[in-house]
Image 1: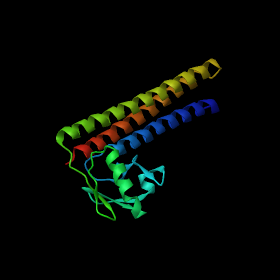
Image 2 (image 1 turned 90 degrees about the vertical axis):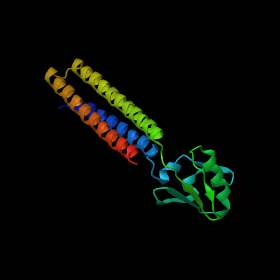
Image 3 (image 1 turned 45 degrees about the horizontal axis):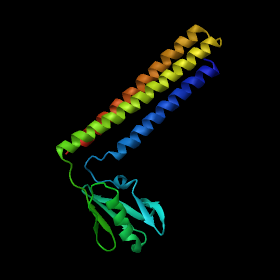
Image 4 (image 1 turned 120 degrees about the vertical axis):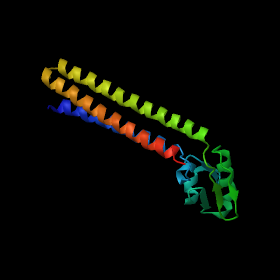
Length: 187
């Protein structure tokens, strides 16, 4: 296989891998009923006049599956952290206990679980579209290489390899989606 052909295949693989990484990141944002420090990702605290991610102002941990404990590095910032959590509209009601904030994570209703599964499937479909776009782009580049003098057999082989790659990544997405769905629906 020529260098150009290998480059096309490698770039298609890279695009598809980044689609999978993006999907995993999006799945981590969909909560499955169990408390997780990542639930507070995206919460921004006004800290001494600047806006800072919550994980830079406090230690966040989960002592059990139903609660999150936020321990500020600076006790004087506890009010600002509590205000930021409430302002983030995450559906949590933080409880200020003086030196830490306790957040009880309510169990998910059946209706909410079903809507989270729909959200996960929608993210998975977006990832599949991204994979197919990478395949289309690689196929177009293969045909351009053929016009530039690459033998027809090599191009055919390349197109087959691109399809195998596509099928492999679509299967990965289906597997990740099944795992996330089971995770969400497990009570």
